[in-house]
Image 1 (tube, rainbow, N blue to C red):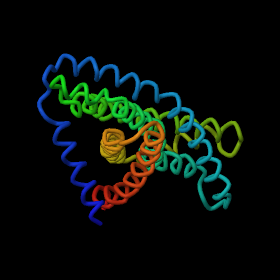
Image 2 (tube, helix red, strand yellow):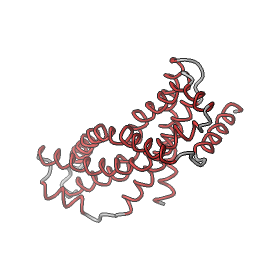
Image 3 (cartoon, rainbow, N blue to C red):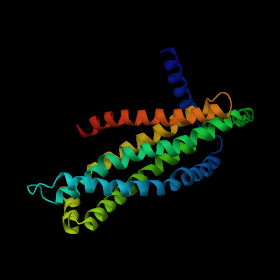
Image 4 (cartoon, one colour):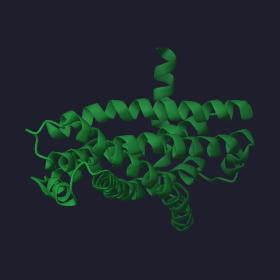
Length: 247
């Protein structure tokens, strides 16, 4: 318990350092643009591929589980739409990014710690926590909502492809289903969750990397902890945010 409270305190003290006033905003701007490409743009491919097949699987499973003639066919498209918007585009994508982005952040900062690059920054009078972590945080908070939108669009498209090409429903039925009683707030709900998840992934992964002690073995362990802790917190906050935003 004492160890948990100690780590909890160190986490918030680190966040206090991260959000302190930057020494040279122009340098932070360049760093943020670099992180937008490294953490955001480079994640589009994996998000698009997984979302496409996710949408396809949801459509096929919904079709095979609603073969009763009582159910109208457009419910398949509706199920694909709501599943992608409410859960898969934000939560599942966040879990994927926790593995890809989170481990990358933890290993990058952890390597800088064990090779004493962070100590060198501190000696030069640079706020190392803010300089290394804040651009990553801003980049993920700005770009992850775009990844969520991409996941929704590609997932629904994948569902349409799977549904029409497998012959389980017509294109007209699927399109009618994704338009049927659409609630725009669901998109807002998904984007709000995405912003929270982006903050969790970046802050937890940075924390694990920033306080690494030892060598390369410890850096690997920190990367693993970053993914595990981020994933657990994402699932926990998914329940909390769903209760708060949809109740």
